[in-house]
Length: 128
Image (cartoon, rainbow, N blue to C red; front, side):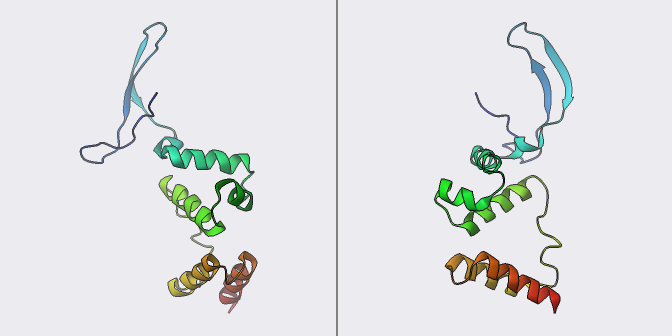
């Protein structure tokens, strides 16, 4: 079975479900039906969300399951959040320049600082 596409393959516009049919009794419904928020996610993103829930939202547990670094897992989560129409952490990095944020993320990805040190840097910058 295939998932319902959410965007038009011709113009990339939003697709809307307008009819439903029962396989058992052939009953049909017509109208304009909204899709669930998660229907916008790819198969890979849905698998990630399932793993996220199974790990109770603990990204550090997901590191072992996926064999990926914490920053990579966090970036995938942020991508999913954006796909759902939200902008993550809008207030989280207030007062932090783009260059400062990139430097902290780069240091974290290289392993030259820990997650706790990254958070401390963010707090120090925001507090000044």
